[in-house]
Structures are given as C-alpha cells and as structure tokens.
Image 1 (spheres, rainbow, N blue to C red):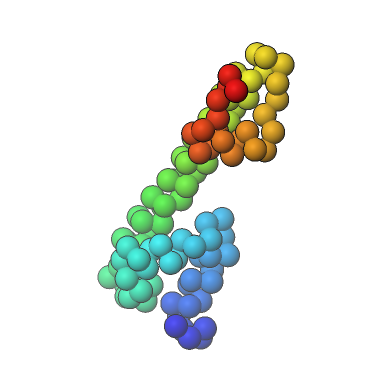
Image 2: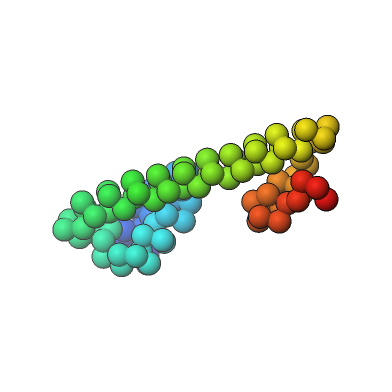
Length: 97
C-alpha cells in the first residue's frame, strides 16, 4: 500500500497507539477494504475495542501470575529476577527449584 492512501494513514495512526500491529491483525481478520469502506465502520470499532480489551486482560493475567509467583517465592526470602519472570510467563517456573 502506498503511504498516501487513506488506509495507510489509518494504519499509521492505529499502530502509533498502545497496540502496535493492531491494524495488520485487523487486516488479517477482515481484509484491507475494511479501512476505507464505510460499511465496515461498525465492525472495525467493535473489533478494535475487543482487541484492546483482550490485550489489557492478557497483560493483567500475566501481571497476576508474576505477582503470585513472587509472593510464593518471598515465603522463602527470595525475590524473582527477570529470568524467573520469563519462566512464570512460559509456565516453567518452579518455586521449589
């Protein structure tokens, strides 16, 4: 897509926000025409809101998992480091290791 199209400008605005890559994900789901065809406007708004809510929910889930693991580790006077946090996210952290 050329950088001077309406769709390209919308892509740039969407990707400059808190959710980079959202416009490409939306394209994969709905097709590139959704950015310029007014008939898609309600779907685009609904999908974008759902995407943002899913991202926020996943972020909260990951934070809660790290917090729970850190609380468990602190029982043994241990504080998680960044590698431990990665293991928590991957589901491979073992508080007894």
